[in-house]
Image (cartoon, protein in one colour):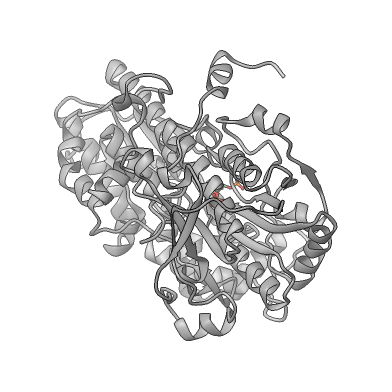
Amino acid sequence: MEKSALQIARAAYQPKLPKALQGPVVACEGAATQSVGDQDKIRELFPNTYGLPVIEFVPGEAKQFEPINVGVILSGGQAPGGHNVISGLFDGVKSINPASKLYGFILGPGGLVDHKYMELTSDIIDEYRNTGGFDIIGSGRTKLEKVDQFEKGIEILRELGIKALVIIGGDDSNTNACVLAEYYAAKNYGVQVIGCPKTIDGDLKNEQIETSFGFDTACKTYSELIGNIQRDCNSARKYWHFIKLMGRSASHIALECALQTQPNVCLVSEEVEQKEMSLDDVVNYIANIVAARAADGNNFGTVLIPEGLIEFIPAIKKLIRELNEVLTDPATGEPREFANAEEQIAFVKGSIAADNLAVLESLPEDVARQLCLDRDPHGNVQVSLIETEKLLSRMVAKRLAAMKAEGKYVGKFSTQHHFFGYEGRCAAPSNYDADYCYSLGYNASRLIANGKTGYMSIVKNTTAPAAEWVAGGVPITMMMNIERRNGADKPVIRKALVELDGAPFKYFAAHREDWARRTAYVYPGPIQYFGPAEVCDQCTKTLKLEQA
Ligand code: FBP
């Protein structure tokens, strides 16, 4: 395989580990834990893995361990640093006993069910250290939640002598990891299951998890691109750029990119919902800023749009809720099957309430269509397929034309559209993600050596230098509550949305008026891997503000 100069130089980078993980460890256990909601129900569903203590690893005495075979799965969307989780896990498992083996299941959870795997040897691992992507074993979105899948899984785990499985995934995949841990514990199968917090979306975080890996690199990559666009736009002074940013439901990515680049407009879906804004309110908000800048002679600007915006507009949220219900077969809890898209749309239109139908029919045809069509395997609307950036700019143009006719706007409105998502998911991990991910993987091996199951690997205090990071484990049940999914109540990890009383949003809210009117752009430039710490080793602004 040919390599770039950066790949070659980067392969030699040795990720940093917290001091506590640099030698033998002992697990300090805290008090019994509770789930974040619906305690009785979660306890009942997870009798073997509920209430476990939070764990922190501290330096301990060296011990002899038998070799242990471990399996690893990459689940869901790619996020920078996945290869470092695996290389940290590999080094950790080998340090437990050099005869231990690591197996990777191919193309996500489906690899476990279909018995597709490969042994990850040091030659293979060395090719992927500090690289972006999930291509070492591939990823997939197969939902691991049925008993027959768990039973198929145990067959191959037994055949390979695997005693622990590490699932690297987001909230849905870690929910499934917890269900699997509970099932194997209840059956006494002797297989531990450990999760790792992955997702560029940044929505898998809580008191115990500071951030999901990949968020740092993805946001820095998008911010570089936004900064470049802003410089272009400030040079030509003729375009408004509408930029949609990935992130599924939560607006963490859009908010972090706004903190890094200071655009003229950044929408935050959680605020749109709280203020009960309609699509027209959102359009008016943007149009008024465009008009104010035009009055200053500035017919250019940038608008950041979180991918999930449309889902948070209250009337559309209500519509989606009903669509999810009617698209699920109540007998099986599975998505209903249709011969084709037209049949599905006709069924939807004939099944939903009149007020929701009116909202559906008021939307542009392409958006309405996408809302009615398929969900991803976890039941999420595929928001990355909805072109909100084009929808909004079209509506803003219409509004500006009306304002012009009323004499309230004098200016030119030419637009460009962008969607940044896939561009950032496989970027070479920043130093932060390279170290954080390696530590998460290495730490997972320590949870395994200590016999834990139903835990997520965690590393905290990450705004401090890596040596001071604190590693341990959090029981996954602690993060769970009951939510309505696909027309049924399910135990799930609570998703972290942007908190409007949190420090990152408050900072943004205090500055956005100034950024809207003035051209206050910041140009972050590309991620730097070598050089001064203040350029290379900074964490996200979100994390800094949250931990301050
Ligand atoms: P995960 O939640 O699995 O980490 O995926 C994140 C994400 O990148 C979202 O931001 C986006 O909506 C979605 O994946 C896109 O999915 P796909 O890769 O299937 O198009």
